[in-house]
Each structure stands twice: as structure tokens, then as C-alpha cells.
Image 1 (cartoon, rainbow, N blue to C red):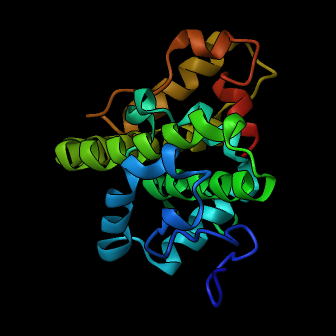
Image 2 (image 1 turned 180 degrees about the vertical axis):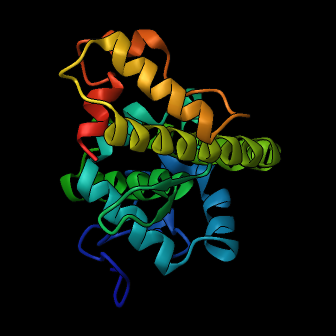
Length: 216
């Protein structure tokens, strides 16, 4: 049993901060044997208490099924390395979400003395953890550049919404509001492209910048 370790209630048999002894639990050996060496590497060189706590908090708030469904390796481009999401808006490494999720499922299987319903999800979590680790190293420079660009775009969009809130009103026509916004935007940011097109002002949903500006 894991003692003096975070979330020992979720990991009562095999804890992700410890080297795995699968011989103690023959039930799960066929499922995780191929992943034990890599997990030993994680524990030795990367995974620590702080990372585990943040990842586990995120899982508790959002659910394991959501992680498995929404952060498959095919969606790597959507979540580069870290999530700035969680109970305390902290950074959470995607790889530790998968590792933590796998161990939660492993411990459930041991508790229930049945691995069948968890086998595929456990394997997928470990494989995705491996793939995220490998791909992040290969792509980190590219995505760091993309992150910088996205941050700049986000700042420009925020500035544009502030202009809309300041200068525009939906009591006038969509075209009139767009003209007011565009004139002011071009004056303040002459070398930047507007994040909002004219057609955006005529949308009838939350994508309309007038609607977004009202929420600031």
C-alpha cells in the first residue's frame, strides 16, 4: 500500500510516484508489463509530487473519460505540452494526465479484481504519454514559436474588443459598428490586420465581436 504519498486513496495499490512491482498483482501484469520500464524512467527523471498533484486535480475536475477522448495523440496540435487549466489555473503537463489516469484505472481494476473493462483505456493512456513525450521533444521549438504567435494574436483580439466596447453599440447597424471599429483599429494599430472581419459583425451568435465585447 502506498503511504505518505499524494492521493494515496486513488492509488492504494500501485502509486505513480513509485517504481511498479507488477509481480505483486498478476491481474494487471499482461496489460502494463510493456510500460513498466518507461514508467521507471518517468519516476526517476521527471515525475514528482507537484506534477502529480496538478495532474490529478485536473482529472478530478474534468474526468478521465474526457482526457482519453479529447487529448488523443491526434489532437497534439491543440495542446502543446501543457494545459493552463485546472482547479487553480495552474500548468498541467499532458503526459502526467495520461500517466495519472492510467494508474487510477489500474487501481480500480485491482480493487474490482477485474481488468477487462479497463484494459484498452490503460494501454491508450500509457501509449499517449509516450507519444506526447516523444513528440514534444521533436516539436517544442516549432510550437514555442506558434505559442508566441498565438499569444500576440490573443493580445490583438483583446485590444480590438476593447475598442468595440469603447466605440460601438449594437443600437446601430452592423455595418456602422464595423466602420467605427475599423477606423479606430487602423488608427491605433496601422501595421496590424484586424482580427474581426466585416461579416463577423452580422453574425447572430457568440462569435459576433459586439456580443464578446459586452462580456468584458
